[in-house]
Image (cartoon, rainbow, N blue to C red; front, side, top):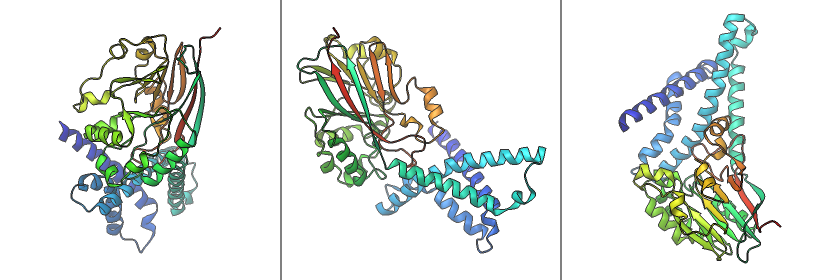
Length: 382
C-alpha cells in the first residue's frame, strides 16, 4: 500500500513539474537561441528532483551535497507552488481568449509575458523567504477567573513549529532564543514540532548548547508534535530536548509553583507511528483540583469540545502554520475551528500560533512567523 501511494504521489509530482517546465519552455526559454532543449530539461529535472534526492540520499551522500539538495529542493517547492497557481490562471485566461478574442495579438506570442511571470514568481519567493526570517512578537492579555496560590499573574512565552534542522539552523535558533529571553518570561512553553523529523541533523549542528540558553523563572516545557513522530526517533528527540534543559511532557501534568496546573498532551499522530494512543483529558485530569487554573499544551487544535468540557482554562496549540503559503490559509480555516489567534468559548480560551519556523518551502506568504507573549491574570471577580 505504501509503495502504491508513493508511486501515485511521485507520478502527480512529476506531472505537475512537467506542466510547469513545459509552459516556461514554450513561453520564455525557447526564445533564447543559446539554450538547448536538452540542456534546459536537464537542469530543470535536477532542480525539480533535488528535494527527493536529498531525502533519499541523506544516508549515503556526503552531508554537504545532501544538505545542498535539501535547500535547493525546499525553495523549489515554493517556486513550484506559485508557478502552478500563476500558470493555471494564465492558461485559464488563454482559454477564455480563444472563445472571446480579447487579448492583443502581440501579447499572445511575446516572451515578455513569460519573463513577467518569472519575475512575479521570483518576487513572491524572495518576499516569502524574507518574511519567514522576520518574526514578530504577538502579545495577549488574558484573564482566568480562578485563584492560583500566590500568583496574581503569570508571564508565558509560547513558541511552536520551530522545525529545527537544515533550514532552521543555529543562526535562526539564536535569533529565536534572544527574542524569547528579551521578554523575561516566567515560563517558556514549546508547543510541538521543535525538531523537523531528523534529530540527527540537529545533533550534528550542535544546537544543544544554544537551547540551554533559554531562561525562565519556572523553566521551559515542551510537548511533542507530529513531526517528532514522523521522524520515527521520538525517544532520541525527547532525550535531546531534556538534556538541553527542556522538560518534555508526554501525557503528564506538573504544578507550576503550586498554583497552576500545566498539562502536556501527547500528539495524536503518535498512534499511527507506534507511540500508542494518547490519554483522554478526563483521564489526565483525574485528581486535579478544578478550582485551580489549568493550562493545556496540545500541538494540534482539534476537537476543541474536549478541553472545553473538561474545564480547561487555556489551551496553547500550533501545527497549522496558518497555511504558511497563501491561499492555503483558506484550507486550514476550514479544517480547524481556530487555525490562528485567540478564541474563547465560555470559560475556555485557546491561542493557536502560526509558528516560528517553516516546513517544506522556507517561505511564509500571507502570515508572519511569531513568538507568542502572554500575560495571564488570575483572580475570582468580585
